[in-house]
Length: 127
Image 1: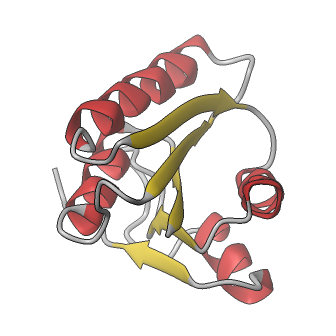
Image 2: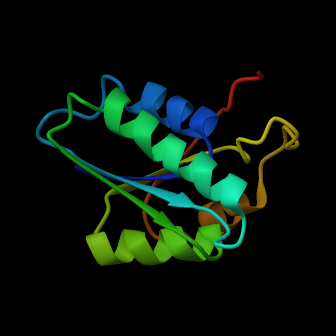
């Protein structure tokens, strides 16, 4: 199984890792992409921290790749999913920013509407 995880924060990465814990095995592959604006140093730092969390929390999976990208999160994740032949996309219900609305975010809505493979939307716990 090849999971593609999309994150923008430590909180989203942790929620995704909670979902993958017990699902992803040593035989699986997990690609974690932090999609953040290239012109926002704080967002870049948050994305890098999210990737670090994912690497540590997914230590039982032998093949974990992490990468920071910029662009439209939904478009970027869809492109990466196709390029790596992902079996499942795992994302947060909304942005990991503490000020984000608790409703389903625009990235989740777009991926759910357009995806050709399963999309799992995990809840982001309140801080």
